[in-house]
Length: 183
Image (tube, rainbow, N blue to C red):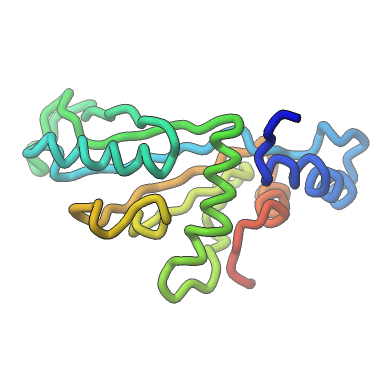
């Protein structure tokens, strides 16, 4: 039997049916689903030291399971000492089983390890069912050890869904296990 991600199984067996019942869909394929997860990390020191960017890329690759690509500045900004075309960060888009595995680790392992965690804010939805959150310390992921990292960094995560409204997106992500704060 082929391997399927645990969160993907949960969605197919339980969450999709609950969403169809809750929102009155006539067909279960109308139920919203997770399309992709976009992760991006800005590295301010990359303008002066390219080695720090390489370290950030390798650390993010350990977390995501795929190597992120380098992002470059689109225009020069003299106040920040940035020239057009200069490397300033990295990003990756996760789809398929890699996406489901990352979400499973994010929801169940990493986010509860945040200090003084009381749930993620509910105002991270964009009006179309997509959720964005910022991670201040990438050491909450167990793949990284304190000795392996030269500096703690943060990154942003955007979960893109096919939901039409925030209520549908919130129901989908809560069904998958996203720990949102109480109202």
